[in-house]
Length: 216
Image 1 (cartoon, rainbow, N blue to C red):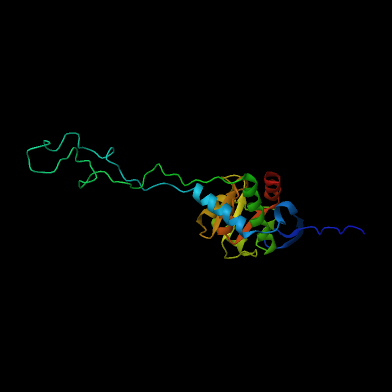
Image 2: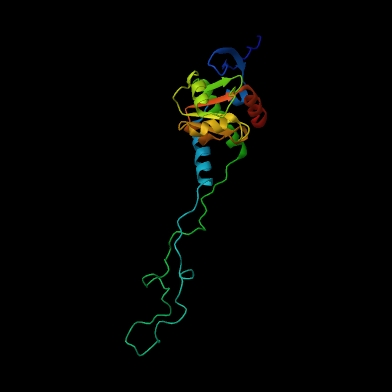
């Protein structure tokens, strides 16, 4: 029996004025994989834990200021024995078993698992028509008004959108800073958390090639 040919994976292509410009083929290994919610959750939790900042820190008796001298002599006062006012028994003294900056919440995740989870989220965007591909970011000036007008012509109008870019000084990156529902990200920094926090992913043909090369 002849082997069945695999159907090519394509996505609709637009220009930056919202007009249809044909279709573009996608890499099935990156945009057509089966989604596993458990694996995606593992990658999300790992990323959140690894990016967690340790802010809470309670000083122990060795860190509290003062208390160098014994508060009173050992015997003959009728009071309990104390060696330092930095003791946790004293008001203003050190804290016993308090939170410290030495805590470590980071976890290790396999690189292949991390890469697979990213491919799953990208595939989910494609499957649900949440990936919008344009031929180029034709934005002559870094003006928020011009970017909003362009985005309103695309299927992602008024939705939370993540735009894939290359340089921080690009017009589209600067113009997007004043749009509350729009966020930009470098193509080499794509991650599951940012992708999941935005409903739509906007990318142009040049960035699509770079993403495919970088993550394939």
